[in-house]
Image (tube, helix red, strand yellow):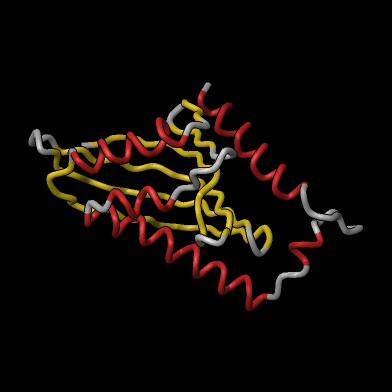
Length: 172
């Protein structure tokens, strides 16, 4: 069931963002056609740096940086592990604070195989795999891997994730 929710959210996200652009005769929004290769490369690097910063912030246990990664606007939505939420406080803020406060140490945190799709100069999709391991204050070790999709929107405050979807799978 959560696979259907993930697929549906992905179709809605990409369809709504791409559908907002003026259509050319080839069906590709004109906003995509107007981006130079140089701008696509620069935007891609900015997004990769932003995602890399997420892993670094977890390693530092920097909840403020992590909270700033996400958009706190009314159109925020996250689908994760079979749940969909549009509420920033219950979907991001509280779980992030709880997660960070429970970490004693970070064993590893890395993203891999990232794929960037520049939709336009203010919207980018980024899909990636992740793998992390932490030790909790309780002494338990938790390791998780999976894949995640971020939809970034650029604003005056930089690139923020407005929609997101993915899955975690804990392992030993």
